[in-house]
Amino acid sequence: MLQKLEHDCLLTNLRSLIDTSRSRLAITVNQEMTLLYWNIGKTIQTEILKFERSEYGEQVIDKLGATLQSEYGRGFGSRVLRRTIHFFNCFPDYKIVSTVSTQLTWSHIVELLPIQNKLKRDFYTEMCRIDSWSVRTLREKIGKMLYERTAISQLPDSVIEDSLSVVKSEDKFTPQLILQDPYVIDFLNLPKNYSETQLESSILDQIEKFLLEIGIGFCFVARQKRISVGGNDFYIDLLLYNRYLKRLVVIELKTTPFKPAHKGQMEFYLNWLNKYERQTEEDSPIGIILCTEKDKGIIKLFDLVSNNIHVAQYLTILPPKEVFEKKVQDIINKTKETYPLIFKNEEEE
Image (cartoon, helix red, strand yellow):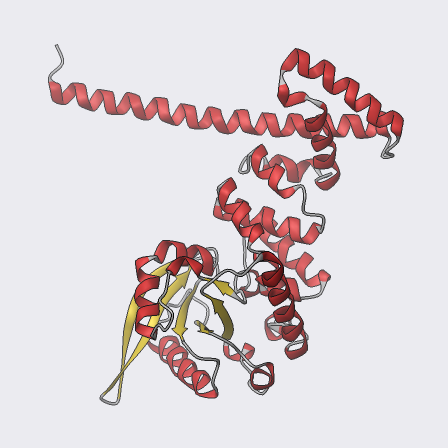
C-alpha cells in the first residue's frame, strides 16, 4: 500500500499530466474551430457569393444557416456564417490565419473583425498574440483606443506596414509600437489635489494595472532609484525594463504641465544609466515624462526624440467616449505637426 507521501506525489504527477493534456487539447480544438470557420467563410465567399453580395446570396446564407443550425447547433447559424465570411475577407492569407489560430481564440477574432482599418486590426492582432491578451483585455484595449494613442498610428502607412511585418516575422518591436500618449490611469483613484508622492504610491499599489496600461513587455525594476554623483544623491521616480525593446525605461511623474527643466533632469538620468547600469546586450535607456499637459510649442523646441525622451499626458479620469476620442485625435494632430516622422532617426538606421 502506498505511503501518504508517495500517494500525494503520484497524485500531483497525474494531475499535472491531465491538466497539460487538457490544455493541449483545448489549444488544438480552438485551432481547428478557427480554421473551420475560416474555411467555411472561404467556401461561401468563393463558391457561392463570388465576392459579390446580392439578395440571392443573402437568401442562400439564411437557408444554409437554418439547415446547419438544426444539424450542428447555434454555432453554425446564419449570423455566424456571415461572420465567417467577414473573417475570410479580413484575413485572406491562410498561413497568417494558421499561425494566429494557435494563439488567439475565435472569441478574440470576433472582437477584431469589426475593426475596418487593416493596419489597426493587424496592430491589435499582433499585440494580442505577442502579449497573450485575454478577450476582456483586448476589448478594453480597443475601447480605450490603444492604437490611436500609440506613436505608430501617427506614422505613414508604409512605415506602419513595415513595423508590423517585422513583428510578425521576428517578434521585434520599436518604441513606436509601445509608447503612448495619453496614458489612462483612471484606476488609481487619486484625491482631487494629489502630490507626486501620492501619485507614485498609488501607482505602486496598482503596479500590475499600471504596467498593463503603460504598454506590453514592461517589468518593474525599482522605485526611487538612487543615483549618486559628486557626493549628491538623486532619485528616479520609477525604473522599468522592457523585455521587447531590451532597454531600461525611466518614468518621471509630474503633477504639472511639461517644463523645460524636465528635459534636463531626464537627460541626466538617462546618461547615468547608460554609463553605469546599461548591459552590453541592451539598447540605450528610454525616458518617459508623464505630465498633466504639454504645450506643442515648447515641445517643438527640444530634440526629444533623438535623446530617447518621450513626453506624454496622463488622464486620471477616463472622460466620456466622445470627449476621449476628440482628445486623442487632437493629440495625434499636434504630434504630427511637431514631429512629421516620430523617431525618424531610428527609421534611417
